[in-house]
Image (cartoon, rainbow, N blue to C red; front, side, top):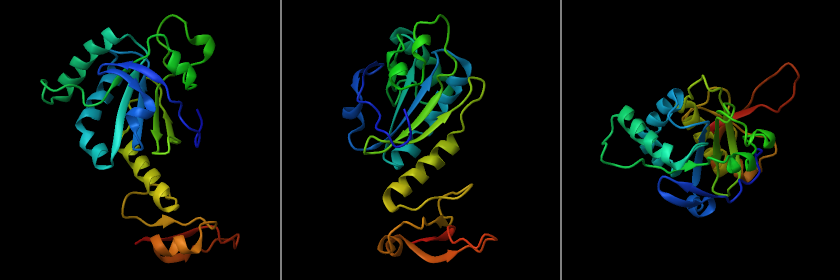
Length: 219
């Protein structure tokens, strides 16, 4: 699983029933978050925050799905805890599918779990990925966090905003960029495309006297 490569069209069993990856995302953006096991503390806090921010992803026309390397039965137990911690309406189901990959087959296929660790006993803690997938089914971003470090949902949304902007316009985004900030214009970007999306283009003066750092405002 590498940046720019297509994510496989895998089949999975979820809390909402069978899922076919490409059929589920259907030309939309999507974010896949994986968890080493169900009923774990750090992951539970992440999942509850995911629910609270569902509208942020919906506003970005992005579908969410999550995966635990655990059984469907444990996932169903976990969903109750997640919803309770999120303090949302407990009568409503989880607003995104939770994949059960108990045999770690999908994890191995996606390169999140080493083949020799597929049947290893215990929890495989390194399998904590967050993958941003474009409407072309290609991978636009990958985050990997340790099991002891809760993911930053603000940064995931920021990276999604940047990926969507690049996909639409071809521009790049600088350090700490957020919506409304200036963008970077790659030198290889066609002039007509630059003129379509960017105004007030400037070249930053650097000691090397190279002109590779060009910035501007989005129109």
